[in-house]
Image 1: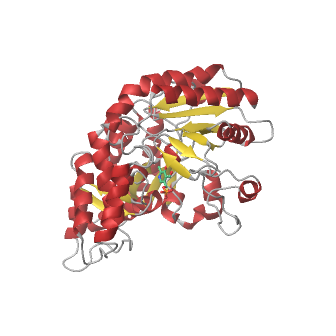
Image 2 (image 1 turned 90 degrees about the vertical axis):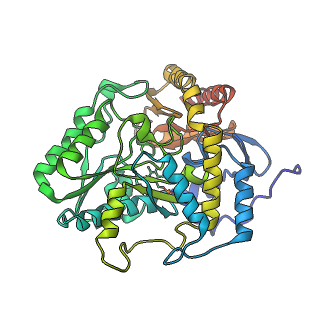
Image 3 (image 1 turned 180 degrees about the vertical axis):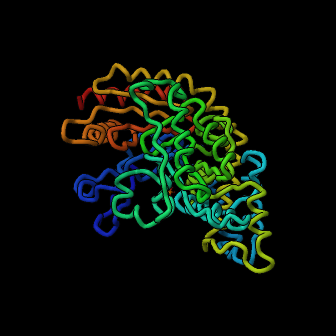
Length: 441
Ligand code: PLP
C-alpha cells in the first residue's frame, strides 16, 4: 500500500448495487477509490483512464478544486433549507445561471435531484400545461423505442428499453412509441449525423391519426446515449418539431447526456438546430459532484401553469432537495468552469480527431458499426453466438484490467470522456480498446 492507497471494504454484501450483476461483481470486484482530472485510481492506486466521464457526467474532469471548495463553503453557510413556500439565495442564483445557458425562451427552471426525476417532472409539467390551457384531454405521452429517460415510472414507461420496461412498463396506460432511428443497412459507419432516417419522425402523424388530439407531449433524447449511441438522422429532429407544432404537442428533449457541452454547444439542441419546449438536464450540471437535475421550460409554459390557478400552489410537485444549497453551489461552480474554460469549444476543437480515432476501430475484429458525434462514440460488436452482451462485457473487463474505463450496453462500447480530454488520452483510449477487442476476438 502506498500513501495514496485506500483500504478495500471488508464487506460487499450490504450494498445492493444498481444496474449491476451483483453476483459477478461481488465475486470479482473492480473498485474505484479516487479520481483526479482524466483519471480514476483503484484502492491500490492503479491508474484507470476515464473513457466515460464516470457515467457521462464529470464533464470538467474529476476533483475540480473550485467545485469542491464551493461545496465546502456552502455547507458551512447553509446546509439545508426547504424550497417549499420558502427560498434561499443560492437556489435562485443557480436557476438564473442555468437559464443563461439554455436556449432563448427556456428561462424557467425546476430543480430535481437526478435525470430520472427530471424526466418525470418534465412529463408532469407537460400534462399540467395541457390542462391549464384547456386541453385536459391530452393525457397521452409519446416516447421512442430504445429511448432512456431513467427509472421513474414516467420516464421508464415513455422510455423504450425492453428490459427496463418488461416488469414495470405497463403501469402507465397512455403511452405510445415512435420507432427507433437505428438503420444499420443504410447508415453503418456514418460519421456524425447519419444521412437516412428523417422519415421516421413521420410516424408521429400516424400516432396522431390513431389518437387524435389526446397527445400531450413527445419526449426523446436528441442523441440517444444509454441505448448505445444513436445519433439523430439529418432532418429528423426538425421534422419532429414541425409535427409537434402542427398538432399542438409539446416537444421534450431529454438532455441529461447532451447537456453541458457534450456535443460542442451548451445543450445538444443548439448544435442540432432544434429548440424543444421543455428540456431535462442532470449529470454535467454539477459535474456530478452533488446529485442535481433540472427541467427548463418555455416561459409560456410556466406562465400558463402559474396563471391557471387563482391562488395557492399551482403545481403539486417538488422534492425535499429541489435546489439543495450544496447542489446549487456545485452547479454554480461547475457552470463557471464550463463557461470560463469553454468546454463546448474544447469539444469542437478535438471532435474531428476523436472521430477519426473512433473510426480507426473499423478494422478491429467483430466491429459491425461505429457511431459518433461531439465527444461521444459507440462501437458496436457482433454478439457472441447465443451469448448477447458477453463479448462487450469481456472487452469492458479487459479494458479495466488494462487501465481504461469504458461503458458497455448490449454489445456496444459507449465512450464519453471528460471534455478536458487531450489528444494523447484519445490515442490511449483507442489503442487500449483496440487491443482488448483483438484479445477478446
Ligand atoms: N435521461 C437520460 C437521457 C439519461 O441518459 C439518464 C441516465 O443516464 C437518465 C435520464 C437518468 O438519469 P439518472 O440516472 O440521474 O436518474
